[in-house]
Image (cartoon, rainbow, N blue to C red; front, side):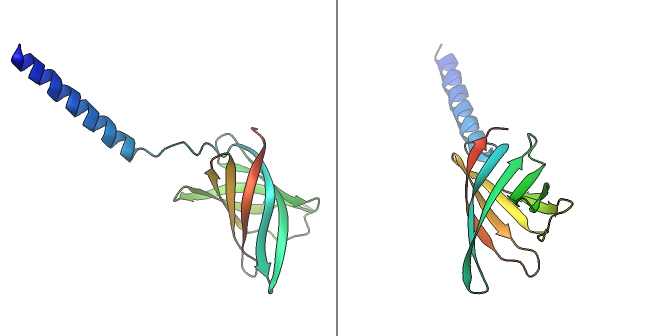
Amino acid sequence: MRSMRSLLVAAAVLAAVTATASAAATPRSAHGPLTGTWTGVLTGTRNGTTQHERITITVNGRETAGAWKVGASCHGTLTLDSISNGYHHYLRHLAAGSTCNGGDVDCLEREGAKVADWITPRANGWARNGTLHRVSAG
């Protein structure tokens, strides 16, 4: 009886250690998916002047692609380039007829109910960032 109790205690301790190690090794999804439509204002400095850019981003259900829009003549699609340190890096492609430059990379990361967007600019572009809020769950 005593050995059975010892065996049960040992099994319980082993299960607790395994669960703790597994939880520590598994990325948490507390930040939630990027899927849906997000909007906000990005701010950065270009040629010594602070600039603002209102943006709307939609990310598909698989988080592999989407769309972006900063104006009627400046919009296009997004394709997932990479994921690192919790950020999804989406390359901006221009839609036909757009009059702005493409090639920037939107680095998106969920932060609770919002999304942080950091722009890695194309050559001769301008870095900007901001926080986006959900428009729809998509």
